[in-house]
Length: 365
Image 1 (cartoon, rainbow, N blue to C red):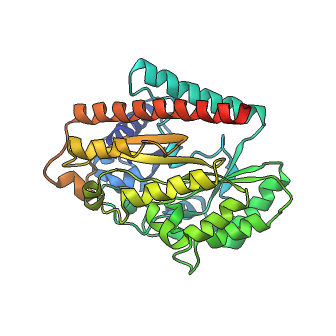
Image 2 (cartoon, helix red, strand yellow; image 1 turned 45 degrees about the vertical axis):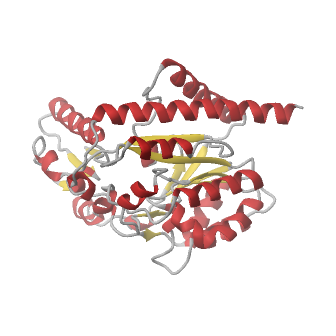
Image 3 (cartoon, rainbow, N blue to C red; image 1 turned 135 degrees about the horizontal axis):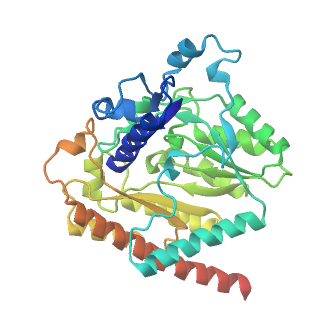
């Protein structure tokens, strides 16, 4: 039996450890459990306290080849695509219908989720996820994924386009590109994300399919923004997720994020004005070490008009054993992280409702 253990945050680690315990308790005596995933790389000591079997990282393909023998199809050639109900991106793990805030905010967030679900169902749109790369080029001081996934490893444009064509033949018309850091795609092969998108858009110009971009960090937009606008103008890009993390320039520097909040907001508002049908989302992190109330207020102000985001994901800073930021002075108490998370979700819920109503009135009249 194989179990994927996530260690991105303390809570996900706790959930994974509990699951490993429960699986081992219910296993048949002759059964064998193999725990793999990012937790074995992020915090192997925690895992070893409850599990003594083999620990396998997300890219340790040699282990599976040794366990299963020489495969008929090389592991690197296995299909890395499928319908959304078959593949789950790291972004969505543990995020489904969480309640972090007051009743009004939770009601607004659930209304938005249900509306989106009904809209997709009415249009019979299921995302077809294509993993295009793993790893990254960043040096964020809070991130534990680097030690699990390593440097950027991109799939070839040809193989990704082939996956797109395969999905089109199966009747899918929404394609979600998945990567640890999508903006870094191609840096290990001498190309860029815009080169991939250009080839994907050329596949079938008459077919009404859409592409969803996940995890494009703002610092990559600088060098490819004009190319990205060209892709957006094609009408093929449905959504863009661009993680800003904080509205405080001081905190962004401490995070090791080589972009500014002002720069990010400029990109997002420009996209909103020129391409209002493109859905925009971002990630915020609250409670990064030394984050003050002034820093947090700067983050709240990012959501002010004219910015319009369809979705935000809020993470509370979680110290991981091999992460630099976990060991610096000025750790923020958990109760403050929770309060700031609620405030941020509440502000977005209100702004989303306002923008939703504005778009409805505009489209109706």
